[in-house]
Length: 145
Image (cartoon, rainbow, N blue to C red):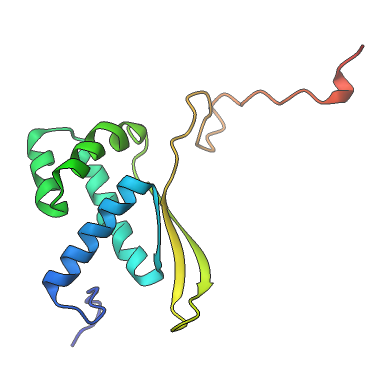
């Protein structure tokens, strides 16, 4: 029985799947966003978030693990130098999937997978009531001439 056995297959061999996912994750790190099908995007997101979390440790061992997964040393160097510092304060949720609708040729569900931009330093990203509230912008009625 295959109950609860999740495997991303999409009609490819395991070597083809691994290289497809590695190349897609590298494209995501280089470009910041990619357009793909929803099923591929969900699997790419899993690998991308694991890789960013791995990069946050910043060790040589983590770098070698990322190289063995992604197979592109220049992309791993970019991951450790530019992508990882943006998410130093974030625990998870580094990517976002925005659905686009169906593709004309085969009616596959398409989407945009993108890296979430880092929050500005002054803004609080949580809904914690104890956190200081951001200053409200002044309205034109408050100004007197």
